[in-house]
Length: 431
Image (cartoon, rainbow, N blue to C red; front, side):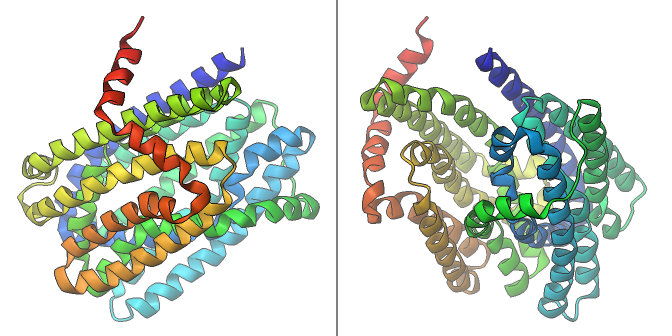
């Protein structure tokens, strides 16, 4: 019965993500063409700054809410009431932080400051996004997935209106506020109708949750550094146009990410359960997951490297020609990134989570240093190289340096062996 719930829950998430990804690609294509590299780069810059402060706003609560719901079902009203309260207070503080940062970093750029502040207003309603973990804990993710998809479709229609009526960049900056506003209202209504407890704030529950969640804050922040530092540094050290080219390449490289996420999320429960059958069974199944993820990612990387010019031209147009060499580099970053996501299954199974802090911290430092060195030397190509090197360092080199994690490298070596690929394909096609 539980297995059926998990499968149905995952199916709704994956299905809605596929539809949303397709819709996102189409809207991004037209928006990027309309705004041009400079305007698209400015929106990407604002999005990166806001993404940077989200871990601070959430204080790691997103990592513990499902567990809290399962362990203390009688207090779910206090759990989510407290989480939303912390998120709302954090959102206001973060909006002030965003304004302060851009006022210093972009002191003479009025348009940049306005766009970043408008974009940051999304944080107020994004705080309500924490309630989605109640839906996960109750195996009701189909509701949150449908709501997210419908909200995105409505916002997509709004963006089409903006494109047709040729509105200014300020209207695009605030469009995500509408998205999260719809999601927040809908999730709260469904929460109440599905019998959710009355939401209320509790100092006791807040302190209990933060005593655990605070350990995730640094790790989540460092992960955000991986994803956003390059775009922020590109804008500050070069210009919004460079960020626009770079963001276009990243969007193309990551447009199949939901496929890899689905593979990893679907395989995780079965692999963890195989621990009960012994270490050999566990490592064999994990090796197969690594094999599928790595070889699929490599296939994608080769394809995008060869057809980068065609992909950029079709999606973004001739104005984004400078993004082609960036895509040819950054797409190889995804191979190590997706492997990193699969690797976390082993980390969880072997209870090595404490080492993630060191991996993410040193990886973030390496990313900032490399960007600082390479962007002035070779521009957006340097940012792409910095991201690729950082992923290799974090997901391969650090796993060699930290002794308790070295066992995983043997599983990795077995996974990239062509013989394992043949065996995995036979296993998948076996009736």
